[in-house]
Length: 173
Image 1 (cartoon, rainbow, N blue to C red):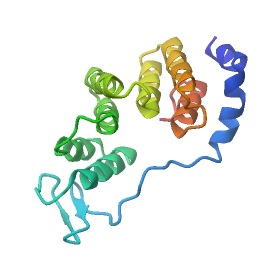
Image 2 (cartoon, rainbow, N blue to C red):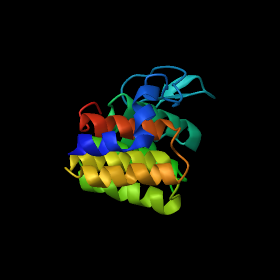
Image 3 (cartoon, one colour):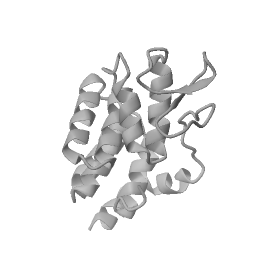
């Protein structure tokens, strides 16, 4: 049934093909550190995320990269140290890391916070859609895809990721 919904949606026809040419725009860390450590550009050393020397941008990049590489507990630790965590970006990545670490409902709460802060945050909608697939709600995931499209996100990484998740039933993520 889900496959037929996907095939019937003309906006999705090109998206699956275009995904292969798209790259994840997330920044890469300057230096790989030992487990639980974050590279600080100022001191040129790897330090604990709780160190007051680290600024929010450094903590966010570290948290995002930890999450991207499956190091969810480290991602949560870094993101929880961000002083101004009340942004859609931080809440989205925090929700992703928390959900992937096993606390599904808490992850959903962070996506809701992100979307309350910025209803047009495409990545929050994509991760929410992926979570809905995990929960067995492909119709809800498709609704999030439609929201991304309605909010001008058809040409985004987030859109392509959600299309791929819908097509694979979430198996790839």
